[in-house]
Every structure is written in C-alpha cells, then in structure tokens.
Amino acid sequence: MSQNQPPHSIEAEMSVLGAILLESDSFHKLDLSADDFYIDRHKLIFSTLAELVTAGSAVDLVTVSDRLRESGRIDRVGGTVYLAELLDYTPTAANINFYADTVMKKSKFRQILTAAKATMAEVQTATDPDILISEAFAHLQSIGQSAGKKVWLSLEDQAREYEAYIQTADETRFVTGYPELDAVIRGVAPGEVMMIIGYSGTFKSAFLHNILLNAGMKTRKKSLFFSMEMPSTLVYQRTVQIALEQNTYFIESGYAGKKDGSDYRERTAQELVKIGADHLITSPRPALTVEKIEHFTRLARAEHGQIGVVGIDYLGLMAADGMTGEYERVSYCAEQSKNMAKRLNLPVVILAQINRSSATTGEMETWSAKGSGAVEASADYMLGIQRNKEKEIIIKLMKNRNGEANLQFLADLEAKYLKFKSLEPYNDITRKNTERGLARLRQSKSEPMPDICPF
Image (cartoon, rainbow, N blue to C red; front, side):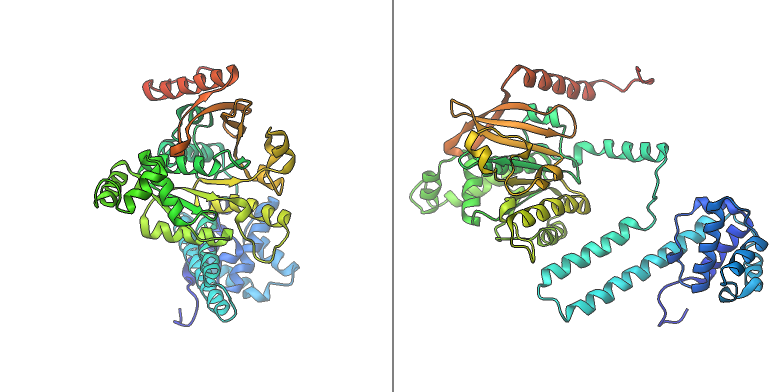
C-alpha cells in the first residue's frame, strides 16, 4: 500500500470475498457493507455476493460470473479469471471473521481521514470554532458507534445488552436524591431526558439546583449545570444556601468580612468540598445552542472525568442558529437535546416554562410546556411544579417511562435556604405507588434472584 493511499488491506478484502465464494453461509457472520471495501472491483463483487445470498440463490464461481455478466460488470471486476484467483487465494473460510475485522478497521480509518479532511476544509469558511469542534466530535463518534454495530439484534443479543445495562444501572442512572420520587421513576438512564416545567415563583431553578447537588454528592461524579438565566455569582450563592443551609444575608456578610472573621471563605469552601458540593460545575454562558452544550460537555468530560448528569436552565433561553420563531427554536432544541443525550450517553435534565393557559389555571399537564409539543415528545420523564390552594409546592410526575404517571408529591421546602428537604406522597395513589417502589428496591438489594422465573 502506497503512503499516499488511504488505509486498506487488499489481502484481507480478497480473503473475505474468497471465503464467501467457498462457503456462502459465512456471509451471515459478517457486518460489512460494500463501502467498507476500498478496491472498486471488490465493492462490486461483494454487492453481487450480497444480492445472491439475499435472494437465496446458490453462490459459486458460475452464478457470480453470470450475475456480473448480466449486469454488464464482469469486465470491471477482472472477469472470471479474477474470481477464480479469489478462490485460489483463500483455502478456507474458517478465518473470515479475522479478515472481516481487518476490513472494518481499515474502513474506519478511511472514514476518520475523510472526516478530518472535511473539518480542514470547513475551517476556511466556518464562523464559530465551537460549533465546528462539536460537529467534528459528533462525526467521529458516529463512526465509532455505527461501524461494526449490528442492524438487527437477536433475543440473545438483546438479553446480553440488557444484562450489561442492568448491572451498571446503579452507577449510571441519575437519581434526584428524593427516595419517594426515585422509587417511582427508578432513575434517569444515560440517553434519557427529564423535562421539568413550572411557572414563575415555584422554585423550579432551585429544584434543579437541589437535584444536581444531590446527584454529585451521592455519586461523586460531576453534575454539569448550564445556567443561562443566572450569573455564576448567583449560582455559587445558591450552592452555599442549599448545601450549607445559610441565608443570603449571612453569606454576603461572610464574604464581605463582616461575620465569623476573615476565614469565612476558607471554611465555607472546606465544608462544600467535605460534603461533595464541589462536584457541581457550572457554565454561566448565555444563549447556548445544543451543539455548544454538547461540545462543552465533551470538554468537561476530558477535563474533569466522569460526568453523571447534564442540567440545563432553561429551554426557552437556548439558541438555535438561523431560527428566530419561538415554536421552531424550542422544537429544534427539545428534539436535539434528546439526540444529544443519546450521543453523549448521559442523562439530561432540562427546565422549561409553561404556556399561558396552564399558568392561568395553575394546573399542569404534559402539553403545558411553553413553545412546542416537542417538549413533551422529547421527554422520557416529565415533572411539573405547581402550588396547591394552600400555596404549598407540589411536584407532579406527568410522564414516566418506567411506570405510573400522574402522581403528586408535596415538597418540604425551606424557602430561605432554597432547600427542598424532602418529597412526600400527596395522595393515596401516590402513596401506594411509592410504597410499592420502595419495597421493590429493598427486595432487589436483599434477596437473590430466583433460579426460575415465577411466571
């Protein structure tokens, strides 16, 4: 192979084609396409083999030659002579997986090279380097995710993936830190999205802040907080309020040097680190696009290590290039946030406002999000924050991928600290579902799985 040629292996490509000619059943062991072959005539031969195998026809030197001749492509592959050469080159089909793996790896290298060249070309005309970096990351990741991945999964394949998923669920799912709610939703898994909606004055930003802090303190993974509404100074003040249960006057006085001596800042920092509040890291940049959020998340992963959850405050403040209308912009951001969660393989939690009709009645449903029905459609879980007649905060579970919805929890909120201390079932149906969920959790941790499924 010339140094100026893209990566490929003529020997591996010939071995794969020869093995299929020897034993057509070996074709079904492969996860290759014609584009994975570098040599043009090898692409044509593989396509022809695939046509014959798919049609259930016999595959041998004669049938392949006839099909190529009928389509006028026999000369382009070197005639029957080259097909016979493939058979002579491959004495057995036993090693086809090894050679197919080589073909796939070389194909990946060529795709990476193509992506790199495309990025280099776009550098000349791009206006935003962050977006270009994000697109390059996404392109490279798509190569890694798609190459070698099966199109169809058998029941055994699915069971194997599910087993791996369940065995790591406790480590990878995002939990809010409120056992009653977590028992019902059973955690937000990587690739899933939780939408939280509410009208002004229901402490929805504070609730997001609480659950992001809870997650970081519990898992010791970083919780990313994209705060497009508040400056970093206010985010920090709220972190101290919630985590250490201090009011704003006390915090401001401490940092002004008016309380508890000059070491207030040091002692506060030590206490925050001690309880794990330092696992919350914040980006206060305004009007971020989904692409920039994904880019900054990848940078955070590279710099800080494991990321447990991405929190966004809020959907209505996100930007979308070239889109000015609220409906179009919110629809795009909601849909692409779901795709982002899957690409990053992380749980994503997003705040959103509610529409005028719901704000007027005070009652929330899944369609109450402001801007677009895509908010509901993109959510795996959906929470609504509202007040009852006594002005108490109620958390309403309106959409639940893992079970019962339309459940309500009464929040024990200490407003001066912005601290959501606990969530309690607000009615009988919520209480029953919560007790059932908590019982399942206790049972799963204390009892071994039965040898035979009870049903």
